[in-house]
Image (cartoon, rainbow, N blue to C red; front, side):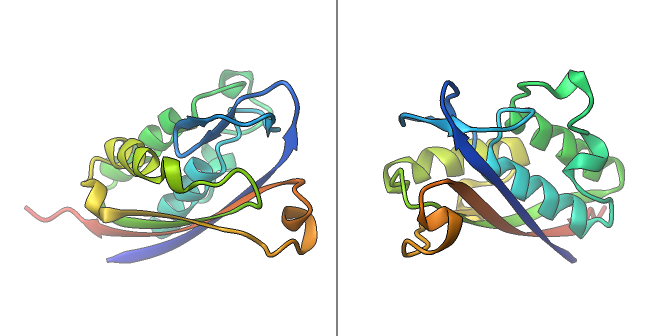
Length: 159
């Protein structure tokens, strides 16, 4: 078994939808990024790739590659899972913490868990998503953006 940690953050911008964990969240701003800027999917992708010793999301889906412009980050996560499968790994579980003052995430957590679980080919029971505030401290606390952290456990596929 191997463990990986992922982190991602993006600043808020006008004119883009807010997508977290593959779910479109009703909010007045979205996140800046080359892809859809889904900090949840990006953090999970980094955690998985890190657990397998395969670098990070930018190694496999670089921001300077136009193929990934406005990409659906759940599809990038699915691709990362395929990369792990090619190396004989399977996802066991993931745990995600989203740090944001707004919007409140509780109403969307179950949908995020379901979307992530589907992309990871695991049960939603093996996916945890938690929302936390930064208690109005720092750039997240001032409402300038959102950060996400993830831990992933992978295991070698056994015959």
